[in-house]
Image (cartoon, rainbow, N blue to C red; front, side, top):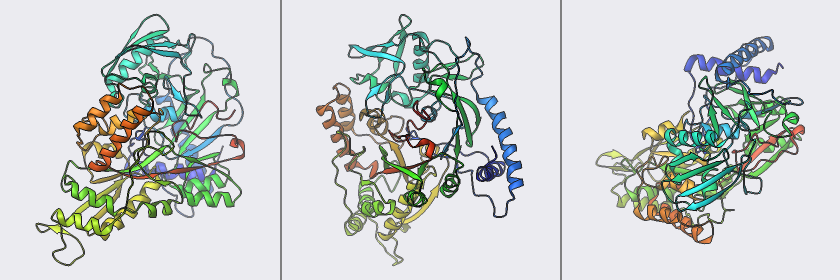
Length: 557
């Protein structure tokens, strides 16, 4: 299918890739990762590009996609004749990120593979926020650090081979050895196969919510094929991959009885919201995930359907307290007081002021009351030794201006708005500010090459608070990139691990968030809402759990 706008987009992507190379990924969380951020390779085509030239480039891009897909696809042979799968015209989804690799142990990639319908975790959230499983009958506690997982019989990988206890145990042990993000909640988990459907799980730390741990985005089910590639269990499987640009999916014929009813799916990365809007308006994509409030209003004005949802994500600023001047609590407090969150909500045309590290519909959401006080912020800077000694409007200490670099990434356009507003607000209290947008935010965070990083993450993708709190705030854990360490926080997290889900555990989660609000390794900003534009054929599509299940088993049915 020759699609003019998409052809132009691919032309721009290919040209930029030739000039600058591929962009990296960021965290989510599902970067995540947080969830991973998009490559900024794509740009708008120059005015006057001819349709014939765009079509020729599209054909070249298609050839590139097919070649890349051959290199990235599973390559595994089916162990039996596959049932029929695939029905109807393909669904085309515009998104902000396409993976560069198909590696379920590579940092945030497993989040993206699940969001795109290729992989699954052993447990997942349904539309009601309940934990369910396509692969497991259930899980039972044997003792404080031992659990027995029972698999459903006759489940299959997308190549037709059995999802049995040996395969699941190998998978869990491989994740624990190769993805540091997987050990936040319960430490290292050792899996041992019993019979064909039972797996014993021994945890390094006590947990009472093992089903939630197995729902964490790192813990997808896969096996390695003989050629070293990976085979998964999701409702779709990879057909072709053009890294960072386009992904083509086809239904997994072994998933369930609806496999033959599912259509093929194509996901395309747009680094430019205006280009995505143009493609959607022209009918060239069936879903735009996500669109800005301004775009949502424009599309609704054209008669299109736009669905709104509480994202579950939180927008916050990671503060590099491992380096001066942000090692000084007074400076961090001044920054926090300078930020006007109500103005941010107005600029975003939706959302709420954050009250902690979780969306406010959760029982364990924080109860922090943020305020703005520019004069108090200036006083705190003065107490920290920063004053405007030369009348240039910037505060300094020992002859050096207080200078901060603000950093974010392109796949969450809202974050750039937050960053620019913050730059103005910090400048108003005398801080010299620069800003940057990077392709691979997790790499920047890992190297400590930032002062303030504006970040987005779904902080409760498993429906409970322990995962994100451990990742970001436990001493030495994977997303604690700023050297934050608080013995009281670590003790609260340890105690949370011994408690069943409920009011007592929720209260401890709130206490952790209160400590974070005092110490400020992160600054809480916005509890956002998102907009998703859908075509007529996807009127019944209902997004949930942020972007964790964009391509789900109900898509196209």
